Image (cartoon, rainbow, N blue to C red):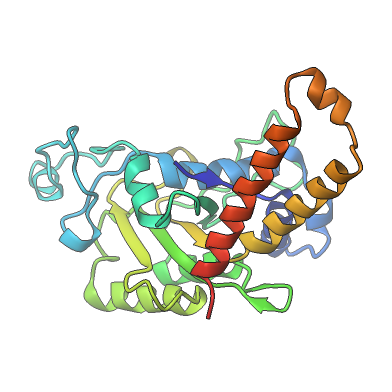
Length: 285
């Protein structure tokens, strides 16, 4: 399994930055609504979990399992069938295999671009009313926008990537699969996501021919799911805060009342210490 962490502060910064850019209002990001934030999160989850219509390129194709369909992209083109979601549903096993090399290291970051945000000042009622653009944006522009939201530093330390998966949606003309486009964008992701030296294939690409978000007029998207060293200081802070409270017995009577005794806390701290140890070893120079 895997755990997708979507930090409120990071989502707020990314959404506010984009909103200020779209509205050309530098203060737009200071008045974000919950529908706007939720829309950003939903877009990323949809980019990861919606079914995939596979492409014809073998190194970018989703691995078929028991639900594999005999319909291929070439057959769809020949029969002039309309692109639609999915030959293959979301496969959690494929994701975990790609981005979680060890069972203990399964904390994932998720981002998607281009960001589709409800208009500034929208309410819950009109949160689904988004700017519609039926003209596909260039892959390099979507890549640049996506990587702009990925932090390169955590404090003074350069953030490294252990492994990542990029889901490419809306490649109906197979332009992403052209060797010069694919190689160029792969190089941009590699430069934008400094990777560990021990993983020879740190970034995995999956392409889908179906439009990204057709209901919102978004033909193309890129979704990045990554396992990064930025999780280490985050877990450190959580463990240290919990340990400080545990040491002085804060709220322990409430936990004990519902069956969470000291032994459970000791086991939990040991598990987290092992997780942090595995992550530190994985990202050690």
